[in-house]
Length: 393
Ligand SMILES: [Zn+2]
Image 1 (cartoon, rainbow, N blue to C red):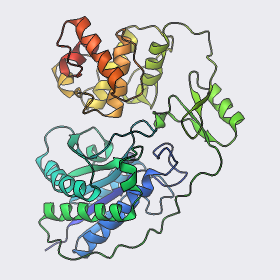
Image 2 (image 1 turned 90 degrees about the vertical axis):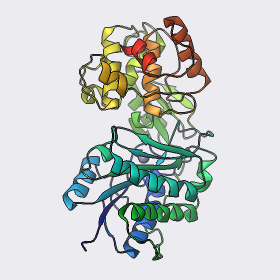
Image 3 (image 1 turned 180 degrees about the horizontal axis):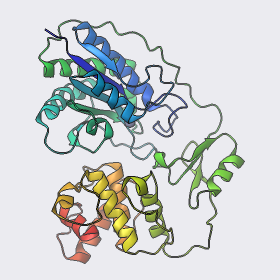
Image 4 (image 1 turned 120 degrees about the horizontal axis):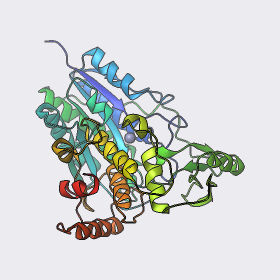
């Protein structure tokens, strides 16, 4: 019988090669992901499965997402599993749990794989079961075979970090994931693995203070640069109106000068900055917004387009039933960072001032309720399809 081929992916790259993606203490996500991947690979190989690794096993480069899925597709892998660890705000908090993602829509095979893996890794991490989720992640979208992405726990959680800093837990998680993959493939997992030690570059803590230039501390992907010299960080921030310089604890030490006198509403400017960030104008096909603090149809259409991009539906800037179905329902109990950024921006553009930080806390819940009450729909603080329709439809 032909051997099964499994593509294993540790998300991102190691020390110094990936912006963002780290704990508030400066540990890199890849180093956690790598330890899970190494154990998973050892267990799979011990049980006779071929493995293709799609990230750089040295951690020295951050392989592009398309290169990763191309590698798995070209090798004809039977399944693809990508290991990640979550970050919420980038500051310590008490959010917690393990979740596994498949691509949007109905894909029973991928969902079965996700279930087999999630059920086992939850036990290995010993964290809250956040369940199976669907998201428009490139790694699960672009792969031809059933593919999943595991978010083992939060790097910025005071609860989860204790598990993530334990090599024994990460090894157990990798072995548990392998057992789930083997169960999915119908292969016995009886043979034990010898897991090699971590030979990747040491995850050295950053020496001295590092100043990061970002739109907001929680938005690690907005980072324009990281500097040991504050003057250089300020010079960088000045190129990006509204950007701030943060110290390694996330405190604001400098805010860039606005190019023009501040106009309009500061919350609306934040919403416009968010919509202009992370390559959204390109990804969601709109002309970058003028950050003027005034709400208008251009800003609202841009928000709708980003929602369509997130939801994986046709990006046409027109509200319709497919878009309504694709909008993610968000609540205090169940939300994701980027959808929450978008929700907060949409609330602001509808005249409800709320911080755009990607965290669905009491402030956001209250803002959703105020908006719902204003529109005469059930004020339950949960942003579901009807709320999205009132916001962007
Ligand atoms: Zn990640």
